[in-house]
Image (cartoon, rainbow, N blue to C red; front, side, top):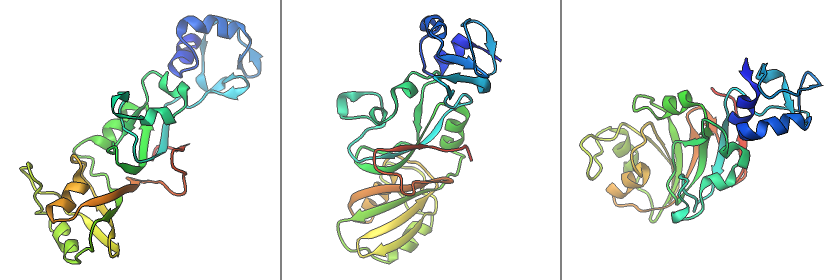
Amino acid sequence: MRRLDQLLSSLGYCSRREAVALVKSGRVKQGGTVLTKADQKVDPHTITFDDEPLEAPDGLLAILHKPAGYICTHDTGEGPTIYELLPDQWLRRNPAVTSVGRLDKDTSGLLLVTDIGSLVHRFTSPKADVEKVYVAEVDRDLDPQLVDTFAKGDLMLRGEEKPCLPANLEIMSARTARLTITEGRYHQVRRMFASQGWHVERLHRERFGPYLLGDLAEGEWGMVEAA
């Protein structure tokens, strides 16, 4: 059970101060009955707002198809941010919605966004061992030897003290490959190819752990269940 004003505020519907007027407006109901007291205790799963169930009262988890050119921070100084693609109400939630598994500005594809702290930790912990699958387009024909090079587990990146963990490379065409990694080092995929003399011209993430991007359109999002 939670106080109604705290509940509405935490889910981004209003501030706690605004909750009193919002409740008095008759837009909040419990089991079809209009509620009138913002400080009463309620079960979040029985509440409707404008006759719709409250959105993700137990925490929000969604997939976002990030377009290239967007950044994964709230700082607008470097260009458009992924948060501009999300509903305004999500940005008012408390805890705040954040991205899981960042992508650099020039990389497109699957991002998770959530306000569930345990999920953020689960997927970003160094011990998480979460598979990430990328499709990379490079500047010249690929050498089949790269498959073994990436799989050995002894590839060193400039400035790193430990080699990359074994990664699975599937050559799809002359200049396109699918790479599966379990780490999340800074610009890792681009740096892995660069270490062998290839420049990644386009990079796209199609899977993050158990979540697939599927046919979700660029710039769109979709709610998912925690796996």
